[in-house]
Length: 199
Image (cartoon, rainbow, N blue to C red; front, side, top):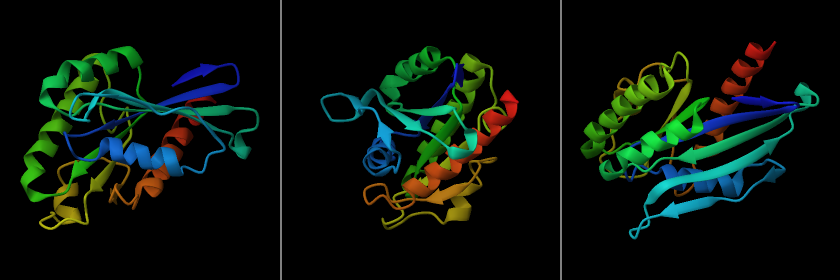
């Protein structure tokens, strides 16, 4: 969070293993979020179309209950491939702060270990670069994505691997199922937390 006069900048990062649906979730959010103003969606991709660096959306929100405070949500995704680990480090270093995480899980059984490994890395990097604890200092929500596919693990089986989340939302990013609901939950939680800290 960065406070500038009557402007409150809030930073979200979509994190998760390669192919889990981070960019698809962000693209759906960008196209369908009911905010009155939004900036451009910037995509940096490799030759295969995967997110190589990040996607970024500045949302402008004017909540009535906050009077003259302009709230801007800045949303990024990180590349999930192992080869781009240094770029995940770079993003956290550049941001210097993260207010909330949307952790995107591939619900298929065969990707459980990839999800767990990515979650472990996230916790380690937040501690290393920002000196913060996931869940305690940085709230997060879990998008249990690809629920429309066969061979997905039950919600409760997946959720127990990602403790202390604000919520666990079942999503189908290609259709947008659960995306707006999940973002609303985490954004309201984070906004309430940050405003209380400013009082």
